[in-house]
Image (cartoon, rainbow, N blue to C red; front, side, top):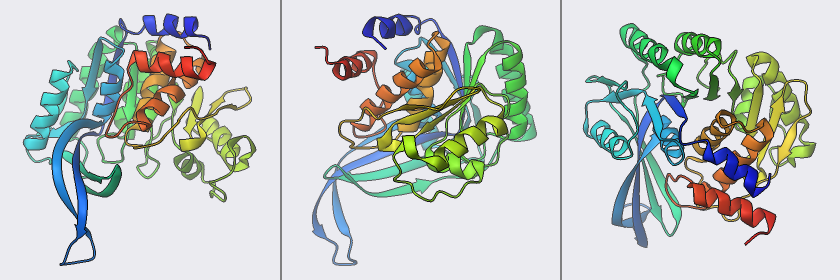
Length: 337
């Protein structure tokens, strides 16, 4: 894709309206240095220098979209606790619509703490609660989305397997949205069983795709064009999920796009240096969906997602990619200054 075509696609982004539904979480990064080993146990002592917080999970998908889109909404479950308040403040500051988020006093907001020293993750600590919305809350979410379907261009389901999404919620929203001609995408978690049938696109990584297709992964280091397990999984998932596209992210190997009645299309990685993979999948589903909404072909949308993910993994922390960074990545790949 040439730069003029990319800019034409991105020029259409600002006016789009996208809603992200799924597991909301707060990502905490504790930055420090290691100078000694603890006398209490053979573990490093991290001297904390600073802490930073970012929207995570479905909130990070919304944050990625907000770099390009003027109106982004996110819906999920939040506790009325300190982490929930911090997440609400971060999203409000970034002008992401959270008016339909579900707040529940009995729920503990999901918090993931990563301790980083010397550009390496030392340990991750998860504070989470696996629970879904009540029947009343589920209907509240479905009604809120249904009310806004005429005004939105796409819906993204972001499933981290924490329980907010269910087949009942997804099927009701998908049926209404697809009937209205809207794009519906999902970033699945096969360990959390949700029926994704009828969506526009589902984006698993390789391990998730093999698990969802029931195919044992024999050689994860296979080069994608020769990866028979991957190809069988992609074709099987197109049929299982009855979806237009299955986009499989492959980490340092790039992405593979599967389409109905088309040969699989491999997009090699654009990553130059990997510092942190946190949120790379969030960026991929956000930008692929955005590309489709803005009139890109599926292959063009996958190329945009691939470049965006490459930029994100070159940063530390739960990062996003800007328009300028995305254009610069395409320029570098094409050899333009």
